Image (cartoon, rainbow over all chains, first blue to last red):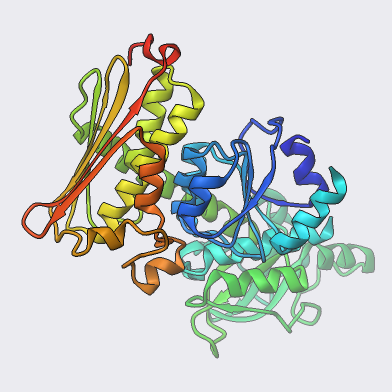
Length: 109
Length: 311
């Protein structure tokens, strides 16, 4: 499923989106420990996390993450959105928990 | 998706919590007195393209007149009357020193077009006027200036680095979490342009990032040097100390000396050295109180990677 379709189906709130929305998302990954995500997230994965600080963008860039989704209604720091713009990383938000999003995805795919 | 707008507005609130109404409002406000007529106001509205205006008496807010009131006046045939008896007297206001979030909440809850800004919480002294689009414009400006600042920082970091054709060097400042990851992401961009394959790039990215973060979190500062050789990429990260007291323990999965604040950001999983070792073909770490810590890693390139030169 493309990122574009996922954003619509999961009702994600766009915080910063690039032009590359037709990327095929490989799988979701839930993680809040940066080393863990860095080591294990699949390329073109969708990263579900509560971490909203600027350092998530570097991790997303380094692992070619298709989209970072801040769950539980967590808001990003202003610098995070600015950094997402700079590094061209897709960033979204959701009121739902990562579990809810994953269960929805499981039903969709 | 009415829900969608709720969510967006809430996120905007979080971003704007630092900004005060007085930084965003229009100070040069067109206002009228109770003795002005609807027609006078209507003419001004048409010329100057606004849709609502505060009514003041000696600088004190006494009411508001909006386009709806003008239409009613036309309809009711009292367009040439003084507004005094007809104007809305119960007007929502916001003090200038309040956060823009408070204003945003009011806009969202009551769907006001504009909010007159008063001098202080219990005052009716008018100092400005605020609309929701003022807030949005300011938000865009704030974000652009943050983006510019970040871009300048990255630029100076890259400029300051010694850039040979095949060597990248980055100075790493201690405790600088705003710039953390900058060296690694720059290395990745550079090596991607050089034509390295994705899986090799990812391994190099992990090594660089973990080493960079360790220097920033735990050391007094240091540098990273990445060299692109014909058949491998070498990564050397050196810091000024204080050194790792128990290296064997530090190399255990899950062991960290990061403090609570740093761990709350998601750092300090205790997997840094383990991950670096796993991603490298050759890996060496040495540390002492005298010399600080030195990490040396090599990632071998296959024949597919080895052919392209770095730009």
